[in-house]
Structures are given as C-alpha cells and as structure tokens.
Amino acid sequence: MYEPKEPHNRRSASARALRYNSEYQSSLLDHPILEEEPEEQPPARARPRPSSAPDYRSRSDYHREPPAYEREDDDRMRYEDIPFEKRIEAQLQSLTDIHFTDIIRWLRKGFLRIIAAAILGAVLALLYAAIASPRYTVSTEIIIDPSNLNLVSDDVFSANPQRDSQLLEVESKLRVLTSRNVLTKVINDLNLTQDPEFNRPGRLDGLRSLISSPSAPEDKQLSVLRQLEKQISATRDDGSFVVVLSVWTGDAEKSIKLSNAIVSAFEGELFKSSSDSAGQLAIGLNSRLDELRRSVTEAEEKVEQFKRQNGLQSTAGELTSTRISGALDTQVLDAQQRLIQADTRYKQLQSAYADRRVANSAVFDSATMITLRASYSALQQQISSMTLVYGNRHPRLVALQSELASVDRAISEEAARLLQSAKTDVDQANSALQELRRKSDASRSTVFTENDAQVRLRELERDARSKAAVYETYLSRTHQISERQQIDTSNVRVISPPMPPQSKSWPPSSILLMIGGAFAGAIFGVLMALTFGLFGHMREAGRELA
Image (cartoon, rainbow, N blue to C red; front, side, top):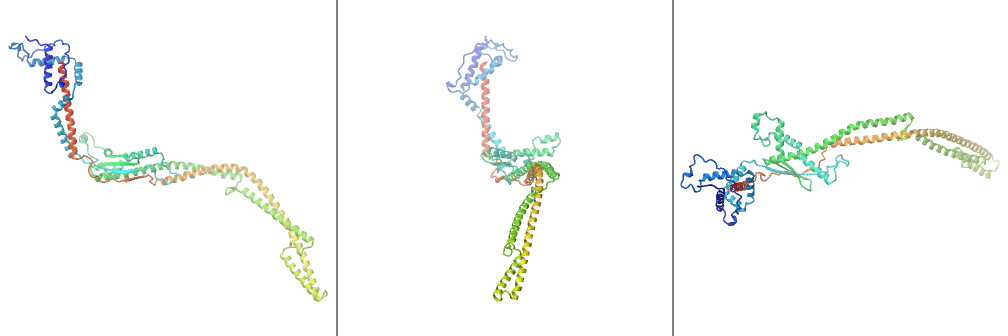
C-alpha cells in the first residue's frame, strides 16, 4: 500500500531540479551544491481528492508512485504551508547563488526578445525621425562690459572696479536677457501669439474647451511666453564677459529673426532700466530742490534784513564804511603831504623875501616873476651899455633907470604876493587836513561799530553761501541726470551675429536615430530577459524549499 512521505517528495523535487539544471550546465562547477536536508516537517493534511479523479487504489499498480495531479496538489499544499517569511528569506538567499553562467543562460533564453526589442526600437526611432518637427538653432555672441560708457567723471552709475562685482553685474544682465520683460516685448513685436509654432494647441486643449470657456488673451500670451522660454537659452563663458544666446525654431530664418529681436529688446530693456533709475533719482532730487530753494531764500533774506537793521552796506563783499574809512585815511595822508609841501615852500619864500633875494631866488617861480626878471635883466644891460657910451647924465639913461626902478618895485610886489599866496596855501592845506582827520575819526568809530555787527553778518553769509552751494550742486546734478535719461550708456555689443545653420539641430540623422533606437531596444530586451530569468530563479528556489 502507498504511503506518501515528505522525504520521498523532497527527493523527487530535488531530482527534478537536478534534471532541469543538467540540461543547461555542462560542467561539475555549474551544478548547485546540495545542501543538507532540513529536519522533517510533519506531514501536511491530505486534501480531499476530486470526485472526477479515478481511484488509483483500484488499479493493479496502486502500490507504485501516485498520479501526477496528486503529486502537484501535494507539492502546492506543502509550499503554501511554509511560512511567508521563510519563503521570502529563501528567495532572497537564492540571489547570492546567481552565477555568471546563469546570466548567460537567461540571455540565451531571451535572445529572441532582445532581437525583437532592438528591431522595435529601430522602427520607433525611424518613425520619430519621420514625424518629429525639425529644430534650427542659431547662436549670438554678445559681450556685456560691466563698465558703462562714462560721459562724465562723476556719473551716478559708476562701475565697480572689483572683479567679483563685475561678474555679478554681467550675471544680472544675463538674467535680464532671458527675462519675461524682454520676451514679452519680443512676443508683441513679432506677434508670436499668432504664430502656429508658439501657439500650438495641446493634446488636452480640445477636451478642455468642451468643459470650460475659451482662454483669455492673457492666458494665450502666457502660454506663448512659456513656450518661448523653452526655446531660448543664454550662457556665459567662464573667465570672460561674453554671453552666448541660443534660439531654436522650426525655421532657420525665423530663428535668426527671433534672435535679433531678443538682442534688440535686451538693449532696450537695459536702456529703459537705466533711464528709469535716473528718472527716479531726478524725481527725488526735484522734490529736494524745492526745499533747498526755500532754505537758500530764507538764509539770504536774513542776511539782507540784518544789513538793513544795522545800516550795513557792502560792495564786492566789503562794507561801505570800511571802504570809506580806507579812502579817508588815504586822503589824510595826501593832505599831510600837501601841507608839508606848502609849508616848506612858504618858509623858502619867506626866507628869500627877508634876505631880499627876490630877483635872484628860484623860489619865486611864477610866470609874472619870470617876465619881470627878464625885463629887469634887459634894462640893466641897456643901462650898463649906455652908461659906457653916454655917461650917467644922458636923458635916455635917466629914463631907463626910472623904468628899472619900476620893474624892481613890481618884482617886490610880486614876491609879496607869492609869499601871501604860499601862506594861504599852507592855511588851506592845514584846514583840509584837519577836516579829513575829523571825518576819518568819525568813520573809524562807525567801522568799529559795524565790525561788531559784521561778525554776525559773516556767520549769516556763510550759512547762506553753504546752502546756496548745496542747492547749486543739487540743481546741476538734477540737470545732468535729466539729460542722462536720454542717453544710452550700456556697453553691450554683438560680436557674432546669428548665421543661418547648415543643418537642423534636432532630430539627428535617421541612421543615428535608428542605431540609437536599436541600442535602446536591445538594452530594454536585455533587462526584460534578466528580469524574467531572475523571477524564474526565485520561483524555483521557493519550489526547492517545498
């Protein structure tokens, strides 16, 4: 009578595994090492035999091996009775028993799958090459000099000479190149919202239009903006200020046109940014100018009011009293000189008159005296010559002597007159000197009084001058900034304009795509073969445990 036993079934399973492995292993090293059989488990309860199955006990060979379906049912019952943790542990443990020959065997077994996947990948790549939209990429090289064009020495936007700051300036302008302000201007200038390439409907737009209202123009422009952001890129070369702008579209001429529009919008955005910054400064300075103007006016009014209250008059920054006092001092000195000269002449005339040297003294130098002296000398010569010829009693000689006496009296009278005139000049010079001294003393006292007030006046004038200087500086700076708003000082130059590309940048050639697709398909087929082989290995390990 047949009695199924667990060791017998285990030996049968082990034998089947050995036969299965022997079909693919060619050496003793490829055979797995049979581990020591675990301790016998209690026999599982026999499941009820199906009613449709024939009763093997009625057969003549009932004492032999039971039917196959009985063995499969018994193996499944024993596998299910094994705890789940032990099954998982056995399967994970079997991963360490994988050899290189197992991988080769799995690949040989899945060779057809690998070939089919490679062919499928090549076909899909060719289909993609046939239906994919071409891309034409153009590049524009732009040099962004961080040091702007300096129109004046003290420009409000002076460049920073430090290297790190210059690189940050270039990086900031690089972000401006691909900013939304620039791209929005490009969209409006080229009317890209009506371009099918940038306004391509999405896969779900038809379904979305059925369940929702049409999108607004802003949403349409936003979608175009997002698509445009995907089709441009800007990078900076390390160690330089050169920026490379790359643009791709489905048409080479459109790529060039779009690249030029982006560069133009970028330059306009830089100018607008600097102009707006200068405008904000000008607005701030203008608001400050009103306050400074009022402050200067008030300071100047205080100066003038103080002058009126203290009677201070100034010419060319000098008080009138001080200037008058200086002039009076000069006049006093001149009057003293005239008095000295007049007194000296008077004393000379007086001495010559007292010594009766009137006719011969050069002090008496009036025109009348000179004429009289000439007449007196001529008469003396005539008298001398007639005396020698006619004697002392000649009538003509008597008349000449009488005429000579008259001339002598005239000389004495003229000398007396000159002496009196010199005395008058001395008195007048002395009177003028005394008057000038009196005026100078009065002016000097006025100067002393005004000098005390001038100390306060200078303080007020200094305050007014400082406020006026600040106001003039702000006023000049405001005019300079206002004029700078109209000038583009950004130092950006295109050193390599976009050129028509010789070929499309994407997709690559059909041969390359076919090779790449076949290679990718082969890799996928290899992964599939290895995955199926690994799962089969783990499943077999679970069966061996049962």
